[in-house]
Length: 465
Image (cartoon, one colour):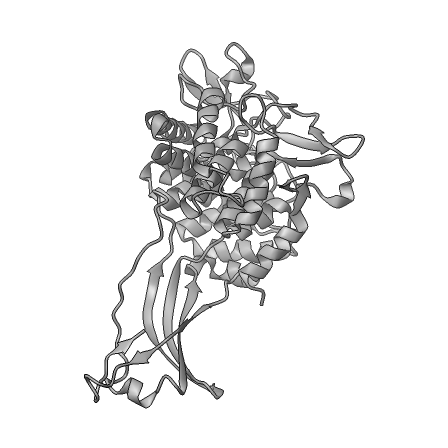
């Protein structure tokens, strides 16, 4: 069984590529032979994964690429493609304009990196926190509606334009805005308003579609009532802009992650309604062999207009079931996911899956015979859930007893090697996901240096570890 580190290495090999002094996440299929190379959404995922996996070298490469492709407003250009001579240029769609979600993820990753490493670069020349605060300033200035406090679809939406009335639920990255509220102190009040505005808007969408809880790809502000409604017809991308399509398929994951961190009861009803809808879809069954009953597109009333499934729609729902603890539905989705074709999006979701707790075992092994190994439990259930305030690592003080006070007289340090074994544990509802996709992290062994003081207490000497 592969460890999560091996799975991460495979992900890097497939998607992480170099460009000049930086790295980017390749987000197309090679067989398509398209000039488009990456986009800010993919880049945000890559930076989040790199900091969560504590790979500073990759993170710095991705950070440098971000710096290279900032526009004049300090935001990342949405898409890059290869030009005629092989150099990267701005993509045809959007030009130098940004898309809000990519920059929010990049800023979130930078704040996390500042917590983990402080600074980056060979000489500490990369100031993660300063870059994150500056990016937050640009997001607030150009990507947030300053009257409704809702995310705009990009820095190109200007007052007076129809696009200025739009918001995109895939940008409802509440956990990211929560970090901004806690870390970007200069604009803390504004980010608090953004969190509340998004929560209130999602609650309003439930009243429009109480049977499904589905959100449209785009919502449009009514200038008179100041309420956001599902878009009607094509407003930016396709005829399905008012449906649950390729943007809003990420909503169960984005809102579910915020709920996991905060347990904000204001959005629980919406999440449970969505979960009930998707559970009903699963109950009708798919065609097997990866044909999950969750389809790749729905009208807001729950009628599917797609006759196929896709990992982009299924992976966020699996995460929602995990957060809510719906074990049966979680297992059913996982069985379907095991047979589905993986893409950069689906694999990226899997990579950021982390254990929820650690068990610690005290182990001793005879130095000249590794088969002679014994152990006892030192601690169980050390919580690894992420902190809502992104604080530093948790500290534990744990007391445990050896079998007897003469333990270290029987097992002399000159003849026996001692160690702590840290074994990651996963929530019951996610155990099948990690095992079936080879994502269980291997146990971590920490050797111990044991010294005995037999002068003061010859019968039961104190031990220094």
